[in-house]
Image 1 (tube, rainbow, N blue to C red):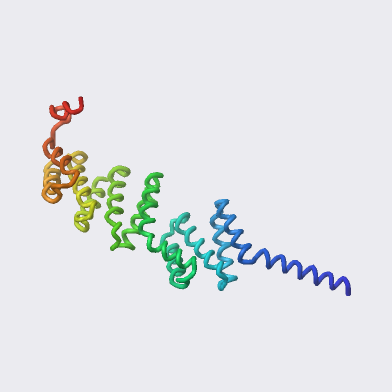
Image 2 (image 1 turned 90 degrees about the vertical axis):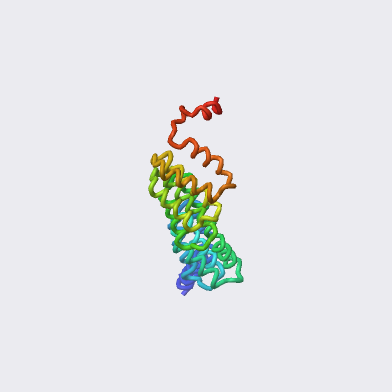
Length: 246
């Protein structure tokens, strides 16, 4: 009988230890440790245990929030990450996590723009393009779209040397966002590509003249005027330019 009682006590103690090790707090600490060790898949699995086993615990919101940002920051899965943030913001509008998710949603286009720029700086051009495409496809009315398209055009132009696709992007900006700050910059780049990279002087002339007609007071106007003045001439044959550089 005494041995049986000891066995029961041992079993109960083991169950208590097991339950403590699988409490929401302990699981959250374990998931956070995985993140610190860059074991993101294990972190997600651990956070999901909180959501599945303790759905009504407030820490389940924290776990979901962490899962969302692993999807966004690490896996670059903008669809799933944004969906989780949206769900949190809708279900828990008055909690800290719900309010944080709501704020993240409001700033999401700007965050995507920052990520695109960072990807480009790291020469992760495919990731940069994917972030831009998600932004332009899902937030079409956002004021940041012209800037995102301009960055995409610059990637095609300067990083990928794909002048035709760069032209298409700049022309899209002119067509849809001519009055934005990136309208005149895009028009200038169209003329620049035609003049200096494709040596299509008639098209360059048209593009530059269009610029001066529509943006005569823009800070790039003097540069456009200079390009027009010396269009098709060799730099070493331009006396005025030579005297400036001496």
